[in-house]
Image 1 (cartoon, helix red, strand yellow):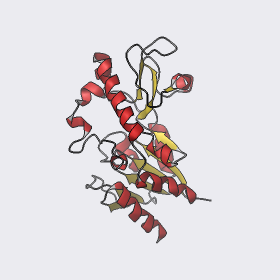
Image 2 (cartoon, rainbow, N blue to C red):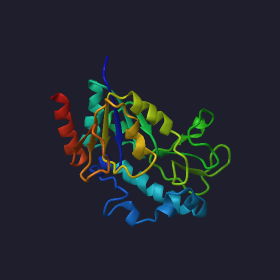
Image 3 (cartoon, rainbow, N blue to C red):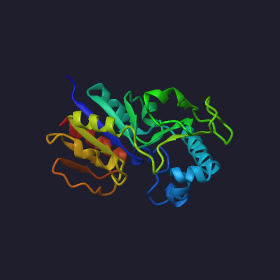
Image 4 (cartoon, helix red, strand yellow):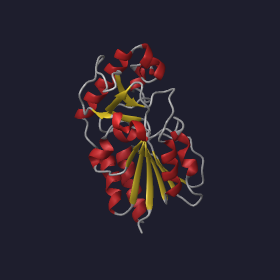
Length: 234
């Protein structure tokens, strides 16, 4: 039976694909106020601004390509049962070949009615894959309400967190790549790993995690994945 690896990824895994991160110098939060473009209050205050912001990101994603870190994570499926739990809203893991990807914060290429529910069986049919095309004011769902990004805004619950906890609990190895572990509830997921589960953390900056199970690999995602694969082979 194959061992199970749970991979928790953040913006750092997509940074080398040219997909802008939020918190680093030059990141998106320096260009936009998070309260304006990524909060539920911001959505109701100025829908056009929020739609334009995600239209720009969708256009950027169309030009981005999976990098070596995405490909290495997908390649783990040759020898392991791999579940990717990502805080990213891009589709670069899927495009790299990962077959089991759980999006905690939504998906950039999808929209849903603004009066719908994020991820419940009754509303899954309401989620629409728009690919990379823009969505504007007046674009309506079949139920007549304005389409909104299929994104978990600040101020909203994270419906997939329970699924993520289950995947971490079952993992034989936990790999954390490119996340500052500052955004909750995702930042606390590692705490659900079994006491005997080794945890590997790849990030160019020190990550605020103190746990005897942790092996730190302080490097960018592509280089860090090379080192992680070497450790697995030893």
